[in-house]
Length: 316
Ligand code: NCD
Image (cartoon, rainbow, N blue to C red):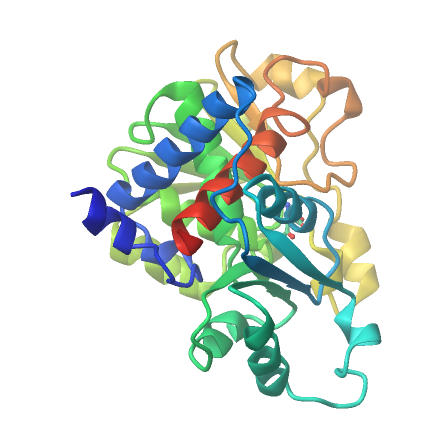
């Protein structure tokens, strides 16, 4: 049994949340939980000794880059780090992505990549025999963020089914919500309330997935319509970099903001507040100290453990 489960990840790319099943989510989560327990006991890991993980990030990143970096090192691997390749790599000279990735495949045991083009990581993973991990592809997907978000919910509520959640902000361009909705859609009985400006509703391909997977979603128009019994609020920023018209961004950027007042009126004592970060004004900083706010603490920490678990499973 153990062997079959391990083979599911070993030397396989992680490109989309579509690849996962409740069983494989569980496998990553139990690996991450063991790593947390071991880390708390002071265990130092060297499972990935001698491995090199390349971090190739064509878009800005704080958390995803650093948590992969920290995760790889905490597992004993070394990292080859490339931020801003658009100004520092042969990209400037006009090298194709295909050539770049083939070259990095020679240097590394795994390539973690973020890029501004939707679908590119999947495309490149096909031409190399080194596993790739999608760290965010344009407005497409962000599977490892969804894994850490789901792991956070799982640790808090002990389950990923029969949950009620509110997902707010930029649903059109926000890749984290695309992955999260599809991920939670793999469990029975979840209801997701969606709160977004009219122009930033989910893209058609995610809508299609929602229909196919029979995920229960309901758009709400106003903050005052937020059901009071949500287990979680998942807030996101409006993705400035995807707008061709800066004025349009200015109009939409702070359509919905969590304030102490809103939390008091529409929240409840058992819920959690999550955000993939960065937060650009859409959560009042007064909320940060609230024990229900997980975005600057638990969620971030879980991200590192999830990535440690994933690297361990992929690199073995
Ligand atoms: C997100 C991303 O890059 O998609 N950030 C992250 O990885 N935690 C969300 C965002 O940038 O808004």
